[in-house]
Image: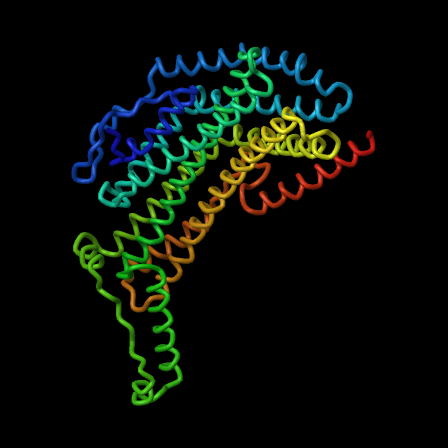
Length: 440
């Protein structure tokens, strides 16, 4: 029975599906345990020649079957449209080329070129879990494993529905090889996106945990409790600076706030001092930024081509659907099936684009929030000089680490980029409709 009680077992769903499409030349140990803060049998996590050979075989199979898909496009689909929409043919050729390059580069970058970087990244993720004291009792791994399993099942179901529509409309009784090539392409692209998003999701959760641990290191349960303490402290020092009378101060029901020694604080102070804990968290923050840099370097080329392919496909399918609704007889069964197929392709690719951008945006937001949390705890009085010095070093370190996911430096994956893409898509679709209406 599958139990997600550590990082490796939590990653099992995405590992299996990645192996199937040739994007995971790794073998994880069957069981991993912690003993006094150390990971046992960590050296068994490595790449194997047989896994790399399988990935190369998948790549060769994909290259061999792709020409059949191109020939089917030319002989079947393009002949159906004829000369009525040369714009569609041009854009479709562009989208097919971008999809092929995305799948090809995904295998080349992840498996052939950067597999050791990914392996090192996963090992550092395990070390960060140890430093943040994440264990199976926190249910973090179980939650991560369930989320990954739900993602895999959802995307597999989505591809299954799309293949059913495609089979009924185009491939029924013929052209099975071209259909398999098309869905091999989409499977590789989809798994690559899921890998990237879940790496970013881990980075986001780790930054979120760091922010909470900084607050807990000073005896507070959460950031809201810290804000309340700072507000009371500010009121106290404000009245003191105005030389208010002690009786008036007591009448106002204000007193110098004290730290709340919760159970966590007692355990934390017994285990290690605040200064050493801040030092550990500063080290974890540095490691996380290094992991984010490695993830961006590994996936930047595939993500760049994936974003271009997604935008091209959304514009193509949207334009084709609107043209069919406005200028064709949509009451016939083939047209209804065709519109349904277009709609689900749009939903699939728009979901991928939103998932990529939103995950990167939230990771960046939690990373930037660390500076605010550090400045808040630095305002507390009195502070131990060594702890204050560590907080100052932490602040200086944060000035040199501005997390951003930028594929090859062309754009930054955030909400602004998503809104710009949607605005450009709407403008481009309107222009295409105007050209189509003029031809009619």
